[in-house]
Length: 289
Image (cartoon, rainbow, N blue to C red; front, side, top):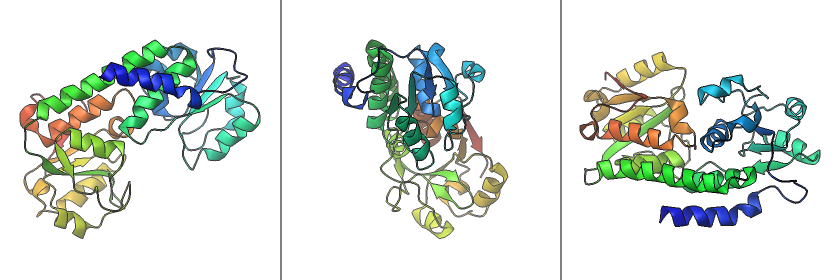
């Protein structure tokens, strides 16, 4: 079934691939998103990258690739200086003007989406097609889907637990509904208590957190660990805090729609159902409540 899904995605991605005027598989590629960089490497084509965004830090080999500005603020001039055959981006308010400027000067562009699991399957297929390696894309889709299935199977039959996933401390920002991270919480045996909070990344009050009574809090906020400690200590009546089930998870793993999504799912599942995982997956650190 997963193989059939991959074939369909690859067959249908031509509409999103670079249009007429391209002269075959590109030799010089620029990635404007960490998730795209990880996909290119997972396809075995990292050697084609001549530029990446400042936040691209995985796999380690990417450290040698020149930077072309930030994820939200790519530099058109620096991108053009790499003489790219193809630039790959994901849509964001910050990079919209840069992408349009590159298109206006005739740069071959591929824009893929990264909001949901369905977007991940499509983006792998589209990038593989654009690079001329559709078979590698099919294999990568099957591999990632298979590893996600393994996580799902591991927690199958366990009673779901109420989960809050935090991605910012001040203000308190959580994973809402209708996104990849919400899908991963469900796959990992949890119920996202902020799924109906009215936004993809809702800002929550402490009162709402207390009212939703999460049994597990996954802290994926980056760069404000001390603030998080104080924040959770101020919520002693929340079941997750009372039971010492506040777990820190590396945000880059959870927030990137790339080949490491199964790692994020496994870490979430271990946080939600530690009884099913001994020892815990890499990247997950328990925190005392």
